[in-house]
Length: 133
Ligand SMILES: [Mg+2]
Figure 1 (tube, helix red, strand yellow):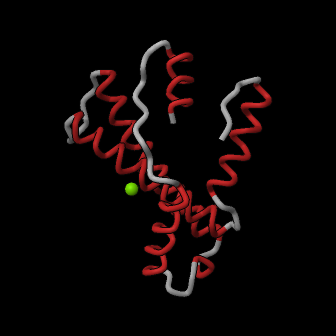
Figure 2: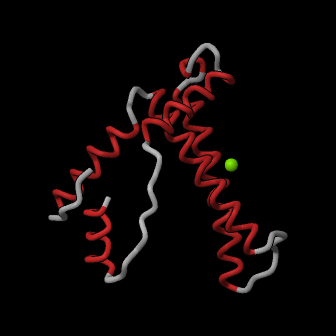
């Protein structure tokens, strides 16, 4: 963690705080266990396109919140929510997207952590950056 903090400080020029995160494998296990309440036959009971639609639906909800934040930015009318409510809603939608992305990856036969690590490291290497997962 301290190596990452030093790297962020070097790149950003400020002492950014990096809070500790629960490990992705732990989160993924909980997401999967909870999903089995809705899908007791397993994630295979939904097709890959069912999971993709769920993920896209949550992504759309996230974009709708961003649209409303943009209205605030641009001084436009139409929002029923306060900026604070929209910020909270944005966090909720980020979480929803994460959960469905994890389930989609699992249903597609991937471990989310593994594919993120592989792709992150490929992009870092391709661009000459030192960060690796
Ligand atoms: Mg949602």
